[in-house]
Amino acid sequence: MLSCMNIKILDKTGKVLAEKGISGKENLGHAGMVPANAIKVKVPKAFQEKLEELFNAPDVLMALKQIE
Image 1: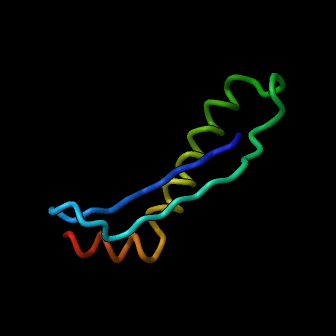
Image 2: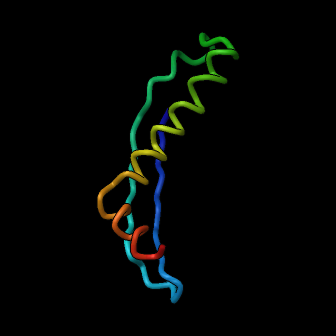
């Protein structure tokens, strides 16, 4: 699975405080060979890992603390 995600943290005026993008290729199994139940587990897990990677980036964490 090819993935690309971006996050942009803005202050209340619209000024960009932080921006991060990630992309990658995740192996979730061979096309047509992965049972539907496995897909229901693998896709959400891969999505969660990418979101965590974005939100845990040091510059993103700092920006989030600025807008609290």
